[in-house]
Structure formats: C-alpha cells, structure tokens
Image 1 (cartoon, rainbow, N blue to C red):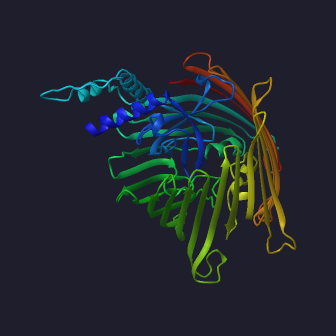
Image 2 (cartoon, one colour; image 1 turned 30 degrees about the vertical axis):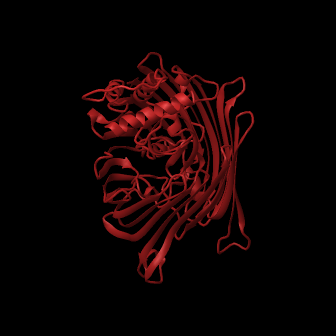
Image 3 (cartoon, rainbow, N blue to C red; image 1 turned 45 degrees about the vertical axis):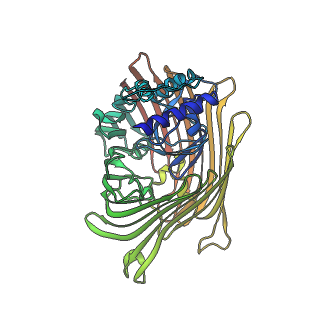
Length: 551
C-alpha cells in the first residue's frame, strides 16, 4: 500500500514540476494490434489503465468525436506508452485521440493539487499511524471504474424492399432487427459484449431472391462475448469473432478458450464455422477446429515479438478436408518498424486438391513489413502467396474489403499525409503467372480528403488494377460523408468493378447507394436509403428504412 501511495505522489510531483496534467493523448503508431501514445509516466499513465479512443473530425468539437473502442496500457516509458486493443475496438489510425477515464484524471489532479501545497519541509513526530499516508489515502477517489457497466448501443427495426431487374420478376421484402452494442465489464465482471448483429425474415414472390451486396457486407461484421480478467489465467469468448492469437484464420462462428501458462505463454483451442465471405478460402459449409500456443516477449521500447503456432483441421458438409499447421508472427522494433507474417502448411495426400505428392506443402503465406519514419509517412513491403485459388466472394472486390487478397507476389506501398488534409496512398506490385509471357504490374491508388473545404465533407476515392492466378480486373470507388454532430449523417457511395476469370462468369457491375440518418431526439433515430446494382449476374434495386433507439 505504501508503495502505491508513493507511486501516486511521484506521478503527482512530476505533473507539478512540469506544469502539465493531461487527460487526452494522440496515437503515434499502430502496428500488429497495438498502439503507441504520445504520453507516458510523466503525463500520469500507468500500466493497467484503460483509455477510450475516439476519432475527431478536423475542426470539430470533442463531443462530435466517433467512439472507436478501448485500449489498455501494457507498458509505460517516460514520454510514451504502449496499449493493447480491447475486444470490439474498431480499426485505429494515427492521429486518433485516447482519453483517460474521469476517475483516473480526477485522482491525479487531486493528488497533484495537494502536492502543490507542500512547499516547505517540516519535521514532525507521531506515535502511531502515518499522517502522510492517511492523508494521501483520503485523497484517492473511489468511484466505480468508468468501464464498469458502460453500455452504448443502438437497436432498430428494418424493412428492406428488393426489386429484381434481371427479368425474373422477383420481388421480396425483408423484415429484420439489428443491434450494435458495446457493453463492457457487465455487472462489474470481466465479461464484455461487443459487435453488430442483423437478423431478418424474408417474404418473396417469384422464383427466388437475389443475395444483395448489403447482405454480403453485413456478414463480415463481428459480435460476441469475451472474458478477459488480468488476474485470471482464463481467456474465452464466443460468437462471430476472431481468435485473438490467430487473426489470420479469419472470422469464426464459434468459440475460443485460452489459458495463461505464465506471463509469456498462452495455450488455447477454438472451433466453429467460417461465415466470412471476405476470407481467402471462403466456404459457407466449412467447419474448423484446432489448438495453439502463443508466446509474447520483449520490450516495447526495444524489440518485442509475438509468435503463435497451431494445428487445425477443417471439414465441408461433414467430410474431412484439410489438416494444416499455421504460424503467425509479429515483430515490433521501437516505434517505427514492424513485421507481420502468417503461414499455412498442409499435410497433403495424393489426389487431394490435385496434389501428386504426399507430405507437407506450403498453402498460404503473407508477409508485410512497415517502416514509419514520421507520423505523416509510412512505407510497406508485402509478399502474398496462394497455392490454390482464393474463393472469396468476388462481388466484394469493389468494396475494398478484399484488397489484401488481390495482389499476388511482391508489392510495395507508401502512404503520406499531404497539406490541406489530404492523404494519398499508392501500392504497386509485380506478378507473373505460369501462362504469362511477361509479368503484370498490379496497381492500387487511394486519395482521402478528411475535410473538403466549404462543404465540410469527408471524401475517399480508390482505383485498383490487378492480375492474379484467380483472375484479373479493376475497380473504382468513391465515398462522400457529411455529418452534423448528434443530428444528421449522410453518406453517398458508388463504384464500378470489372472482373474476369476462367473459373466463373464475368462480373462487370456498377453500384451506387445513399443513406440518411436523422437523430430527431436524444434516443430515437430514423434512417433510409437506397442501393442500385447493375451487373451481368445481378440487377436489382433495394430500398430500406429503419426506426431505432439509441441507449
């Protein structure tokens, strides 16, 4: 107890000496599932603290910031801190804001203000107790932690009307319910529930109902419950989620369990179905199960690495399919350099997947190295390999959800923040198939404008041209978003994709959509929108409306 009081007083004296007491920090670096902040022990951060991360549109007030999730401080230096993403957090970018909880901020401010009053040394004597310790203890607030029973959620009833324009005369209606929730430390426990869920009931007239692009994108979301108590060796979760130590296996509908053997080593197992249509080996009828070991060691200020080794097996329609070894490794060096690699190797038998040999075979490999010398500039080098043809749903190409799978072979990229709130990115790769005489150049370009002058909108445009073993094609997309804090949100999106493959029908399509959300009271909101899709395989119009409640 005395040691903790002295630690608080030391932090308070540091804050007083530097005349600095901070409650918010900027994200300096994002790499391998961890983030670095621009403040450390001298700003009051300590290991175990939880901070809330928000994204603030340029020029807007803090109340307009979008909540991304929570991070936990795992290591602290003098002027920097490393944090781990908590379950349910959205992707975090450099420049986002991490906010200290009100309880932690109040505690440090009270101790610091009390320390400012002691400007002269005194000699005191006492026969029992320690007045300094008792006084400091009295100034340590004891409110419930901010993350305990924090509940942010949106629930809505939805109606979708779909009209098939391909000449089949199909009309359909979907009545559904959707829920977005972030419920942390439920009832003071270490259980949390986060994610998105959408259920629907179809009523169709005609021969059948087309599966829409909206349906596909909705199936890439996650929702589940996780248990993670720092004082317990047990870690578990169930729902539609990633396996924490093996995210390269993509989403599973199932559960995982891990047990901390010691501070560095965790053993676990997992199992479930594979529902994500953006996965490289997608099959809606596949089930997967396996076991793993994860090792984490090193220093966040120097070299740190995480290594996962596991065995998994899959089956399709109840029949055995694959038995494979998977490896997932990440290396962080300081704040500027990171390397990530995942690999899958199958135990092959003659005749399976066209194999002519028995024995171990490399099936999948992805390597990515990133160097970020400054906050505004990052460079990356990637290598992508598939032994078999990827089976992701090709209708997702134009959405950007499968960009990582489009390039095969070696590629490199650069991302730079330009003046006038512009962000430009370029990725160039070179790939040669066995049937090609010359290698093909793959290209991907992106341009984002975080705040368009006078319009107050966010704009994003992308173009990609790729040539891989599973096919070749291109896509162009654009997005415009305008938000009026706590009132109205408008979004306009459109794109075009052209995909050619000898294994499937050509998929040329143009799509566009618009959505509008109006929060007409503190809790209630209404939304509406439309999607138009025109392609060689599908042609349909979709109109939707929803009425919801915000908790």
